[in-house]
Image: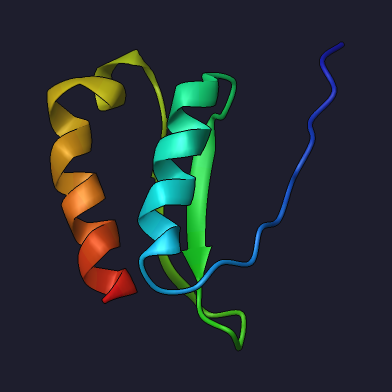
Length: 68
């Protein structure tokens, strides 16, 4: 049976976009969720082979907009 691991990273501003790109390159991430300091979820999106392609560009744009 596969082990599910959850990691939490705290980054601010433009570092959010860089961290998302880093996690995508890692290749073993299934889902990315971005939360406010108070724990409220701003966005969450699954990562799959399809998302990494053409669909991923708008997601990165949205993450960049949130980080600004």
